[in-house]
Length: 230
Picture (cartoon, rainbow, N blue to C red):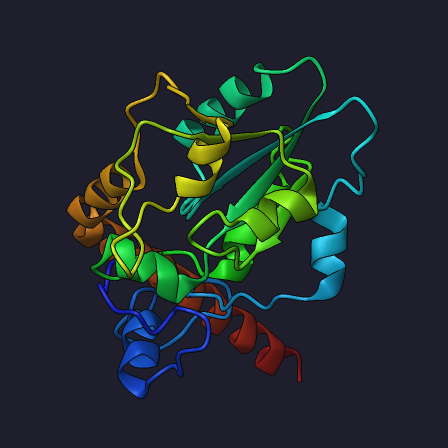
């Protein structure tokens, strides 16, 4: 987010400059503390199982499909999903998450900030979501709707960017008469969060460097105590 690079996206090799810059966010002038720094996210199947609801759709459930980036999963997303959840008596919400490269195509800059694995766990952790499609197609196709037996497709009030060929990604659900716009009532967006954080970048770096300097001092004191014992 702070670097405005794309090296954090899945399927993109991390370059040395990216690694060097991320290291610098928590690095003080005297070296590295073992406690403060930038961590790298590692996805496992067990993590997905722990976050997943494990619920199957039941007869009588209204299967609702929503799709998007769900980047930096925030209260705006939760408000939207809550409103979608209220559309049916027994909702079963399936969230389609687009791959990083697809999100970058329609969002530009260095979006998404969180890669597909991180976004998956964020959305799975939401109480209103029953299932997540990892790497969902940008266009909501007839195959997808038929496969999941979708009865309603919802989208927020944000702009819908056309597909690569210029077509409307919601053309099929609109043709079937099952498309609905839902107003979350929230004006918070991922863009706003990024703007706030970049504004506080220097404060963030200074805080981390000060914190790391203190930790290094503690580490040195611990080493001296160990040496004195021997």
